Structures are given as C-alpha cells and as structure tokens.
Length: 357
Image 1 (cartoon, rainbow, N blue to C red):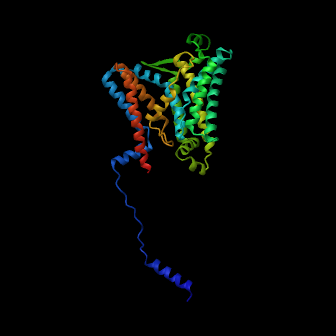
Image 2 (tube, one colour):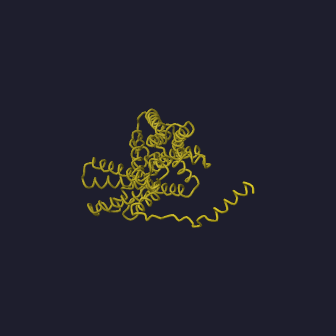
C-alpha cells in the first residue's frame, strides 16, 4: 500500500473519531452600564437632549413663567440661530475627523461681500447675496483642496485661512459698517432672515426656521444618502473608506464647500439678526460652534455624532445664558458652567468610544 493511501486512511480514521459537537459560544449578560454605553454609542445625541431637558426644568423651577413663557423660550432660539447654523457647518467637518477654525471669518466676509457689493458697487441685492454665497463656498473649496489634495492638517489649513479671511475682511471693508437704517431703506432683502412672525405668544424669525430646516435636511442626508454614509466612513477610517471604493478626496472637498456655503448663509442671517453689516461681528463664532458641537456629543475624532446633537448643544448654551441672566448671576458663571459641560462631554465621549474596543 502506498504512502498516499496510508495518509488517506489515517485522515479518515481521525475524522471518524472526532468530536461532532457544534461549537457553542457563551453569552455574557451585559450590565446596565454596558447597555447604556452601547445605546449612547448608537444614539450620541441622547446625552445633550437629556441635559437640555434637565436645564429647562431646573431654570423653569427657579424662574417659573418668567423663563417658561413662549416668548422667553423662542427668544433662546433667536439668540442661538447664528451659532446653530455655524455649528451645522462645523459638525460636517468634525464628522470627517477635521476641524474648521475659519467658519466665523468666512461668515463675516460673506456678509461684508453682500453689503459692499450692494452699497459700494450698486449691484442688485439678489446678485450681491449670490456673490456672498459663492465667496463662502470658494473659501470652503480652498480649505477642502488643501486638506484632501495637498494633505495638510485641517487645523493648520483652517487656522491659516482664518487669518487670511479675517485680514481680507478688514482690508476690503476698511473696517466700516453699513448702518441698519440704510439697509432697511435701500436693501431690505439683506435683513430677510431677521423677519419676525408670531404664533400665539411665541415669536419666531426666518433665521430660526432656516436653522431648524437646515439641521433636519442635513440629518436626513447624513443618515439616508450614500454621501452621508461616506462622510461617516471617511471620519471613522479614511484609509479603510478609500480601500472600500469611497472617493475620499471628493467627499472632503464637498464637505468643506458645503461648510463654506452654510457659513455664507449664516452671514446673511447675521445681517438680519443685528440689522447691519459689521466687519467686527461674529468674532467668537468659531469657538462657539466648536462648543456647541462638543456639548452636542459629536466626537472630535470623527465618524460619530449627529447634527441634531449640535443643535441641542447650541440650545444648551442658550438656555444657560438666558437662565443665569434672568437670575441676575454674573456672566462669568455662564462660561464656568459651559466649560464644565465641555470637559464632561469629552469625558462621556471617551467612555462611549470604549464600547467598540
């Protein structure tokens, strides 16, 4: 008998005597903390929603109808509309594991372009607004190309763009504002987002409606479109997304362009909010947007979070600001509590991320 036949018989005999039992995996009963951790990982906007609800309840108990009136609650929406719009733009970038420090400067420059094109050059208001929107989109495109094609770090790119756009803003406008009275008389369309309307005792503005509509549209796009899934994939692991066929450079450029366009809309909304075109307005918008995003549960490491969470984060800041002001507290308490919320939000994010480890 050949060696091959002997090996075949040995294999068959071993196989016949082998244990036929099917492998059974032991399921460990997960603790409440683990289930909570998993739930927050799947729905990261739950935490800011809970914090928002609790803060409204606390200030409602302390201030009563003075805080819980429809006018006061909608006033919060009016106060955070600019930050909410900018936070939506910032969220898109952070979801790709980047950061945009130039959002505030792009917003202001876009508003200055709209105003200067109208009053300095006599261009029709709709065309001036379109030029402002294109200006914001162009700034975003430059950011996107430098990050995706040139492979520069987003922090460095947007830090440099912030300085460039800010300087361009002051040089172009000569640090001169356009008065609200002149805009109201000759170009009221620039103040469109500041148009108010009442529903019962609540007072809304077009800017508030735009902010809410923008968040809902972006939420749908990120959850239910291929582009949205690609955004999350790039933020979670860019190289893996690239190997999976995702055109990562194109996704990054589209995200930064959309962010710039949203910032330009925020510039238009800012004109409606303050009434005038001011090159010095919105100086802290970049910090405020990052604050809203972090408190809103969007991971700074990218790939996880919800635009709704960023809106909740902006509303939390608005609730604390108005509530403490009505209580007569020092404004520094607002910054102190917001700082605590930021650190707490990052700590929770780190804890939630361990669910995938």
